[in-house]
Amino acid sequence: MTAIRGQAQPAAGLKASGTESDTVIIGLEVHCQLNTESKLFCGCSTDYRNDPPNTHVCPTCLGLPGSLPSMNRRAVEYALRVAKALNCQVAEEAEFARKNYFYPDLPKGFQITMYNLPLAEGGYLDIEGEEGEKRVRITRIHLEEDPGRLVHMGTPDRPRYTLVDYNRSGIPLIEIVTEPDLRSPKEARRLLNGLRTTLEYLGVFDGDREGSLRVDANISIPGSERVEVKNISSYKGVEKALTYEMTRQRNVIRRGQKVERETRHFVEARGVTTSARSKEQEHDYRYFTEPDLRPLQVRGWVEGIVLPELPAARRDRFMAQYGISPDHARTLCGELRLAEFFEEMAPCGNPPLAATWVADTLQGELNYREMEIGKVPPAHFRELLDLLQRRELTDKAAVEVLRQMLDQCVAGETVETPAQIMEKNTLGKTAGDAFTPVVREVIAECGDAVRDYRAGKGEALNFLVGQVMKRTRGRADPKELTRILKEELARGGT
Ligand code: ZN
Ligand code: MN
Picture 1: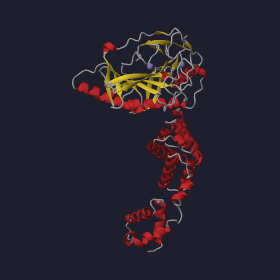
Picture 2 (picture 1 turned 180 degrees about the vertical axis):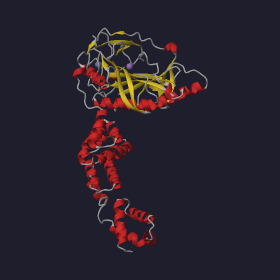
Picture 3 (picture 1 turned 60 degrees about the vertical axis):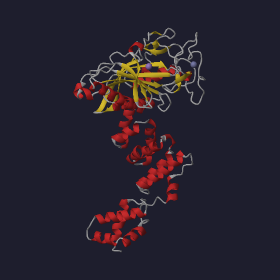
Picture 4 (picture 1 turned 120 degrees about the vertical axis):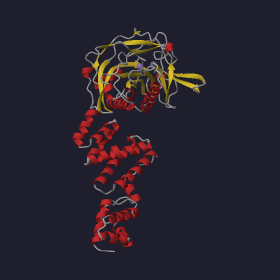
């Protein structure tokens, strides 16, 4: 991978945070696919979903002799947005280089990337670290093209043959390189989440798209050699790979051996890293300036870019404007679509109630069903909040209504309104006297508890409430029930 000077050096003040063996130093190189419509150096479409292999190709992205690259302006614009949002200094002039290596996924025999003169340097992103708010420095950001995709047939031990698909060849990527500022696999995961959120707010990235993210991670124990774990392709994978690698390196040191400086691969299916290459196989990339592209002039360009509201600003605004808790604001703003959904709910008149129901209840139910927020009908959800607000539904009954709505969404059925679902399941009417007959029934049947209550034993009331709850299958609001029970008991009826 790109040799980044300075990456191996731990940041100052490292030892203060613990003994050597429980500290770990992590830096990331994150490749994100920019969601442009065409490739970086040709007009081929980047949307190849459901299309056969090698159908989104042309002489340029197949690297045929005589073809020439031409620059995708939108890709540069997107990369500049990212650079600005991550507080980087943008270069006045950036330069493409050829990174030479021979592998079937690279039809030209080289990858066009930026080397000596990257697009931007020296930025940062604030994340929630192990010990509170933490600033992670960004070393550099550059543009490059993606290679093709290889599909190995057979088993890892007995590969039979390999298929090549160049639909991905030439897809625009930005590579974001961090300083080795991360101190745990969890912090690495949080940084990735932060990057994903920021890039989605900028409208340049779709984190759900297959192949949209690829991470190489450098990880070392202070005083030992650094290991590069390559080609991790999921958010969870990064945390898993780094946790495995951290434990492996500690065990090597514990046995009195030395950690080898090497490149390793993460095998996602088994959750382990394996040694990828020995030193004598390491590539010499023979970088040199790409002669077919002129230096990229970005002077003055970045000043004209107007950024949208970013996650941190939105969090602050949510707290100030809606009076919701920092935790809710963080959860809601951690995903663009979730934040937008919440804002659609805010006119319900009780934003903290909406925040609880969107950030906690709805999120939980969506995760359980592996469902996207985009599929939830906003008008239905708002009606549910209105019913809660007017106390026509208990929390428990509202969860039941929500579950039925979501199940209908998943099944692709017409989604009923909360009112319809309440009607069908007799879930409503928590207030008033709907439960009085049941209360009277319970008082009549539980003479012992009633006597205990009148003798001043407070816990007897809880027992009676429980009995009514049981018979009404949780539809009643416990507070409301307690009130009705007390009234009925005071009346002296048995
Ligand atoms: Zn092409
Ligand atoms: Mn790269």
